[in-house]
Image (cartoon, rainbow, N blue to C red):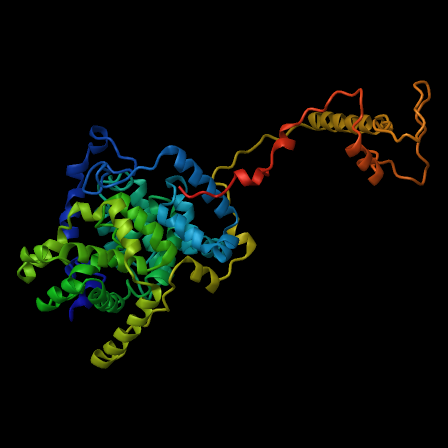
Length: 509
């Protein structure tokens, strides 16, 4: 842990991989051009865009949602995104529930941008990304970024080819961040975060999403010294004592420091650990509820792998334990199982903050003050929105495809105006509404003659649409219904006792 700062030297390509394991190197080596040339023509991509690798879609690791259910969820999310501020302030629990059920794939990118606050940040900083993108950048960071591009999801169709549009956008986003936060610079663990965002949104949106994750959700994670991730490792270890005492005692007995197994989990938000269907579900909840979801995922994996005596019999030492944590059983990472377990872990944002204060006090006592003091962590989308209230125009949805309608010629405009004026004149010249005689006259009323024309009402009076009935009229109708008239048929609206709104209840599927 004393040499962790070495991973932040800009000229050193051995960054975060030296902290946890060589797992990223092993996986990334598969992304060389010699091995993936022609890959897209020989193999088909899955529904997430993967052409191979451990994160490719399989029926065992994911659970499919029926199309009808998906369409209904899309309608609900479209309504929420159209009235985002009201939903976040007044009905946030329902927003959270829908994130737990999974955001529809067609709207995931837009929802992530709204949840993270990236949409508001982008609207309040118009032109900032274009300004950063046009600048050359710091050469010491550009060299490291270029070396890392081919390592990010080498089996995904966006990043499969060197110099492709995916790698170009990833370079632009990471370079822009080093210019936006020069005191932090670049950290290798930021690349997979930015790559996941780029799979769902354009480069500018991905940049502001990365800014929000680095500043609001995981502040200090990518700063020099990596002190924030070390603190969170101690917090995870303390929470494990309550969630799985057996796993806690085993790790404590073999003196396995949390930084050895949780660095890649937390810094990459599990994007390089879980099957892709599980990654998306975890990110849906993470961007809604904050870092407590990352802690819960880590606790679930530790409890499943080290929480029983049968499991511990297979790992009698430090090496065996680390190997077990590097090769988590697929059944524990399956989408449905993992989400259920995450929701059942009794860890709240208050628990995380309480333990953070305890560990921070212990850190200062043993090591002194932090070298880098990050901004306070925001636990979820609602806290971020309340901390930075958006303007009404910040939440407006801008169309991504704009169709240019050809302008009509002056002659066509004149023709349309003439037609409109004719319609208005015809409406004005329409005959006045004639007064309809009362079909249920009182006995004292004289019968109207067929030859007599109805007299117009006085000038000072107002012509009613229908003749109002007095109380005596209604009482007379109840006592003696008129004879000689056919019975009126009951319409469907009269038979119905429910309003139209009652059939459109918000059901959760």
